[in-house]
Image (cartoon, rainbow, N blue to C red; front, top):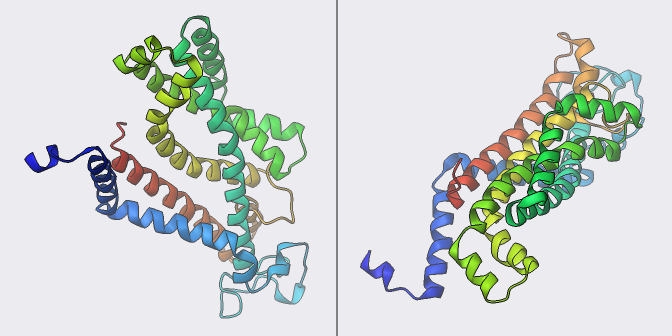
Length: 293
């Protein structure tokens, strides 16, 4: 312990980073989650080169190969149109990740900025943002998303819009709680007395301290966005066929259960595999950053 106290500032920073990595690496579930997420990203990015039948992503029909069980030629079998399910599942992962990037890429910055403003400025700003957040949170997310998707054409972009309309609220509430606590710290008051403006305090003093919380929340939310998007597609309000989406693939295959079970099991297992990876990774990041629940 005495040796640790004698380290200089740069050494302390290195030690802190090493300790975070040590906590993460000592968590087997977190490491497994990271490997799962990496594998999903790898498969999605290189899908055209890794799948045996990339043309089966489109409106291809081969009635001679309908409902074939899993074998060496078709690892996950084929569907009602004779298309390779393994190929469509891998491309379905790409659609799911695009949905995550689109939704969280918009909702996280919006929620973070609104949460920072509400927590730091207080007053009418806090009341307005908190009131708007509470109103949006009072709406059932699935009902709201279904209503929006019902008004728009079922495309990936519209699915993103439907989910993003509500997703920023959870980030706004979380960052509001964290920033409100940080805003009362002495070093924030010292920065204010030193002449620092509101933007400097918000984005140079408060926001860096919110990064661990945002990282954990965003990683965990990725799993929920994938599941939410698959639910919309399963109900017919998501990505428009013939684009492969894991939710719509499950919906198409359920009518042939239990005889052709692979048409539901394989894309459903892909959803489970991906969401499990993001959840395990998020829990690992929580332990690494030592973020309280």
